[in-house]
Amino acid sequence: MYQIVIIHDSQQLEQAFHIRRKVFIDEQHVPEELEMDDYDRQADTRHILLLDDQGQAVGTARFRPYGGGVLKIERVAVTGKQRGQGVGRRIMEAIEAEAKKEKYDSLKLSAQLHAKSFYEGLGYQAKGPIYMDAGIEHVDMFKQISQEL
Ligand code: COA
Image (cartoon, rainbow, N blue to C red; front, side):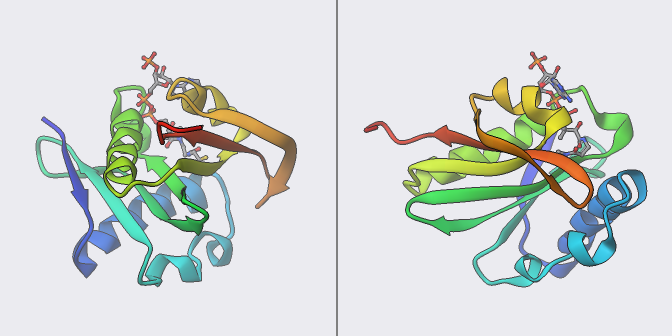
């Protein structure tokens, strides 16, 4: 059984940062000063953790209001061994459920190009050109979640 937690204490936040350091800094070589930015500790940024049946944190993401009814999702990361088992999907679904509850119109993210089909499988659409960020190819992706278009 997995458990989704919206982080509310500094110990959990450290667990999220630990996953991000392993995935983005160690594995993908994103510079630390780009990975750990000011949004991490901004009051309206929320972080999410997914715990496995042993209470081990195996995935994380953060999300924040982006203006105009848009919620932006960032730093989606699942630990190496746990990939391909639905952890990423559960994290994305939990954020979407939260966004719907809070009446956001749409979700936005900047996808690493290799993960584009992961997000497409969750209903996101790519928009605009491919660009480089932290030395990695990215594309912007969106998902409308409000009923009225
Ligand atoms: N390309 C295509 N499809 C993918 C995929 C990929 N890279 N990763 C997962 N999928 C598919 C799965 O096959 C699955 O499909 P299904 O529902 O039809 O079976 C679905 O997406 C959900 O996969 P899931 O197991 O929940 O994904 P995950 O837990 O492995 O998480 C990432 C996906 C991208 C978050 C994870 O691989 C990761 O952390 N990668 C390193 C960090 C990273 O690049 N993050 C993205 C930053 S934009």
